[in-house]
Length: 354
Ligand code: NAD
Image (cartoon, rainbow, N blue to C red):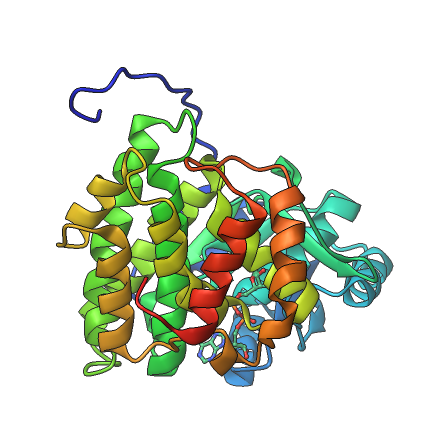
């Protein structure tokens, strides 16, 4: 509860079963058995073929098919192909091993087939804890919430993220921090979820600050994945605001890299929402007085990209993005206007002080 404020919330925690432990990937066969699955379609990113081989080897003939390439923002063509494959195999479980792109493809197939998902995340995106799905077609990226898209089991093994390069670990961690940040001021957010968001921010900040110097440290990787899990719970149980909307539009229409876009924009989104109830709790969790400044300092010290231009965004597109965002319907603690979003984007293009 925030001191001195009238309390009002709705509480319903939506999560699947979670197994979190060093070496937990070895427990995937037990979890598949627990689900009674016999015909598994394995969906994995191409980053670690040896990991996919290992998971497939552990499951033996229960693996009936394998998709070894996934693409960010879930293009509709990949969804159609994967759905056809799942149906042709008569699969009874989708097992995704990888980042948000692998999870995202599994979610889109689950929505079309009713199949359950067992997720083994290898980044800090947090998609595995949310019922939010997204698919990109000719008209851009469409997203929604559906409980059928929420994995029924998530196996978290911090060791699987050791190979994530330090730079990617930092932006992926900041992507997770964005879920926690927008969770603290979400409308009618449960006090339980707000506490989860603050704990997520603390763990992520510790991990982001240390991963560059100690990328193979088990404690650092545990902090980051634990924080990502809690941030994913926040994402799945709180309505996201301006920050997620701008990132969604930039990712879907300008094909900007997902985690990097979150990393650049988060300080500016929080500066826009300065004074929102709950942001002081985020600042305190990050060890600062102002959340926007604390996130910016954390990212800068960890070597995160500082501007949208550095990610390949052409500032000439600012007005169009601002129009789409200003016309969209989403909750945010501070008013969202065309001029306000344009100013936010202009600062993010320059990498100016938030
Ligand atoms: P990603 O899954 O595309 O992975 C980024 C890159 O890292 C890829 O090249 C991948 O192969 C590689 N990689 C993954 N794990 C690795 C590891 N352990 N070591 C080395 N390399 C590794 O990116 P992401 O940031 O995890 O996810 C982004 C996607 O997820 C976007 O499409 C985004 O919209 C979606 N997303 C959805 C939600 C949701 O709730 N629906 C939440 C967060 C992200």
